[in-house]
Length: 297
Ligand code: A3P
Image: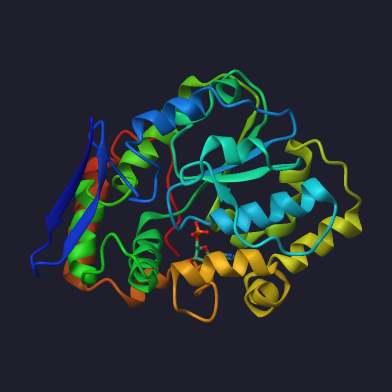
């Protein structure tokens, strides 16, 4: 059953969104969510499809941009991905190849054919403190936000699983479950912090994984075009007008509100000492059996 819920934070600011099977989805997921997930389950997948999977604000657009350049062999910007979550399957079916989708769904919610090994999945994760800051600021910039409350209120929703797509921990455990149990070869696991540290080797790794044999100079060109500084400077000039319309419907910002700081450790400018202690306690408790660690600076 899908229901609309309204949750209030301590200041009375509301999170108003759709809940299905106990999970909080963005309100723009079509219809009652159940039917959309069923249609996605049966979606026809192509061998050269790429699925960029992430919890929000983990670098989805970054990986999408790299993958699109590698898939097409062209280094111009493509704007934002079409999300599986927000577009009807009939529409997605008609998009030309090579298709590079974005999604904040978990691997078990992807089309069945992907889970049977067809297409390629790029899964990107990012440390939860930087994600929290990026997520809160992003939501405050949207025209029709599901939540526009304070940072403090956001943090409580984010840690309790009431934010869109659940808590970061919910997404992490789904990710880890896939890593441990899925034996297919069509997933590449990426970390935002590793990409920041060495972009060229990650671009090279993604190209190999996608079976796109691109020469060294093209890989270097993609790397140059996909540094944060270059993307921020040029992305709005080069993306196509129809994509800009979509952005302007989402937000009054002149620039795509995706590209903000692009740093590791910016959370230190936002978390108070008390908020950091609160978060660390939850992190320690939740992650005690986790098989991997995150870099926070
Ligand atoms: P910040 O808000 O911390 O700057 P998503 O695409 O999943 O919504 O993620 C958005 C985050 O990725 C934003 O983080 C954005 O700045 C960052 N990002 C986008 N492109 C990037 C790049 N080329 N290098 C580093 N970070 C990038």
